[in-house]
Image (cartoon, rainbow, N blue to C red; front, side, top):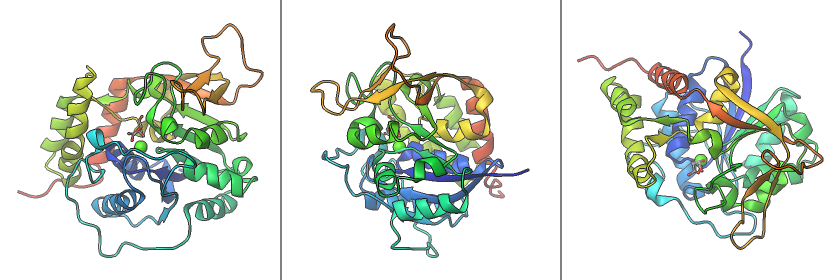
Length: 316
Ligand code: BDR
Ligand code: CA
């Protein structure tokens, strides 16, 4: 099987952590590099959390640091869902052999895209700041990528404000740059990611596996599960696993091509992704495939099976 080269840009983050585990465990995908951005937590936390996940899954993917703050706005970390350390306040060691580099996220991403012209899938699960800097510094980059599969935006509801989703809200200017970059975009917004949840029973099943990965996954998601109950959600949403899962299992998803722009200035609508999906007036372009539905049961079952495959249960 020819594996798909993937670059992941994330703000690790509990659901980013699960997305990394999933990407590592899907045999269809070949992670070529990971970059981090501030968002759910500080850049420093996101960096060390990613190294912690590297250690947990026995991998040593290169991790490149990117933006410490959004292009223009001040960032407000998502402590309720991700804890103070970004990993639901679960303590996980940073591996001693973690490779470190001074190469910046955008430079490393561009170099990687040049070695896989037309092939590299860029997955983005945090604010789009690193992508916007990369696309601005290297205008050829959007055309060199196969596609950008991103978690961000929403054609309907918001989660951080009535209008906007967290990743787009945190850096609306960056999201706007990405959406008009000309890259081939798959938008996994809240429309689909709110359907991609794990139930408390799913989390119990992960823990009952007797693996470190299973126990970690449940423990780190507990604060987010508690937060989700405040919003009457049935489970904890695996927002960031959607753009990863889509690359290996597009058959689980349904979507529509649409015109999407991002509001950068509105008092009530900053960061809102405005689509022409439900509008009688249409934009003169269709710049994204907007995912709208996922088969939740198959999604959850593949997610659990894959991340538990990373490690054999400890012998009793
Ligand atoms: C997004 O916001 C973050 O808190 C999650 O990690 C996800 O990327 C969902 O709106
Ligand atoms: Ca994220």
